Length: 307
Image 1 (cartoon, helix red, strand yellow):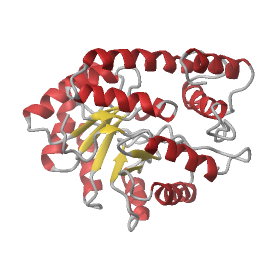
Image 2 (cartoon, helix red, strand yellow):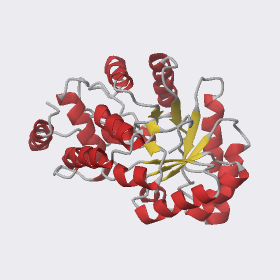
Image 3 (cartoon, one colour):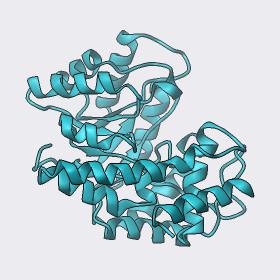
């Protein structure tokens, strides 16, 4: 963990509150963003998976970012997802954001006309040609069906095409090897884990921080965990991780749906029940959680001291 790194610590991927008509709930958005900043987060990541980026039109994405920048008001760095199917569509998103006061961009591999390592490398090189902002490669093989290997990432790092990685691969072995390769190369990349329940291991291995969706629910604990890691208090790091892992179980117990609807759906339901969001509405075609699922999530919140 580098003390002087701009992109380190806890950088939550911001969950987007919606009104019942599925339009942006600006007041809830402001309440949630302020709550995380007040808890001491080091930055905020908008338009990631937790931010329902795949469900938003270009116009809606710009609305979210403009409101986010207004609310954040330079208090923490802002990272923005430019996630789309293919390279030229991502470049189009980058061009649409020019002139906005953004600190870094986050991009996945292409995910429709699937290619191999050669195409993946060229994809990120092409993005670099269209922006001077730091680029974080978002490793998300469950959605894009390609794995960003340590070899690919270090190649891109040495070229200067990317400056960081958000790892949501679920492959902790590869992430550990990436951390070692990054150190051997002089730490050119800021490495952030997106795995809520294993942040302790990532920090111990040398990650610069975390991008946990669960930090929308409990930002304070993730911030305290990072501080404990910086202080070398690994027992406290582990104890906090146990609490967070138990809190994350709310996503395991959802019965009405799977995947995105269960994960982000559980986060939205928790934020709604905590009084931060006005509703737990989801984007089409995903249904909001109801009935027994809501009761179960409330139970998890109560058991873990969040209600």
